[in-house]
Image (cartoon, rainbow, N blue to C red; front, side, top):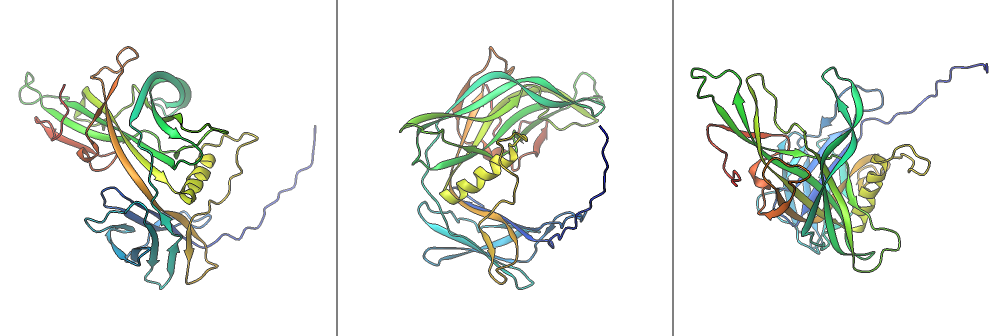
Length: 352
């Protein structure tokens, strides 16, 4: 078939760079944070710019103020010792050096359900795999699936979102031992890795009976995932132990609707019943100019953190079990960072 074509270049009216806000306080130990950045306008190749030297504070229902301090450009942390209280309601206030004022909607910390049971299953799922030449193919990948059993989950229960990380301890060996080839140097390292950056929200099934146990998938850990940082001078000698670190946030209704919309858009695959992509509606407004666009969401949630230790290596289909351990979140500061010590095992090293 033949047809005529005509170029059509629609005019657009892109907005200026706008404020983007991300904030979280919980009833867990801090520090809690607020991130302030300016987005890049359509067609602008510049990266996001942090909003520096702003006045950032949180007020509760009794008008008690907590002032956040700037730890690095655009990142504001709560003072030491501040902890949110379950049942209290918090509002975020921001004022920039340009005199613009922003405010969140009120956020109440609701009590949550404790997830005490995490189960594992060995499985294979299809994932994108990149080869040494940068080519990406979709192949079955073996690994471990983690599930949370949520008891008494019904329409009236608080909704939850989860963040899953893997704690790994491993040993690196020097590639070219010197001066004694029979006595090479070893680096003992531990590391935290984010398994999945998607938004993981527990969504109840339609017509779910009262007091039901919901089995919710948390994350997938490929068996061959490279947990360690590569180096020209070192290579992986062995992975010693792995554990899953689970962060559970119980959401109020407003935060749940925000994260559910975000989850649905990020998990859409272009199918006919997938939600239409649209701008997410957060809970931030510009008080000094009500018509000014502002993006983002300030969240106040109850928090529970748990760690579950995997069996000693190797982790295979026939060697797979978990047991609860004390919190391991403190062993490494940030996901993606490694803590390595020459000849010595880092503090908190898990022994058999």
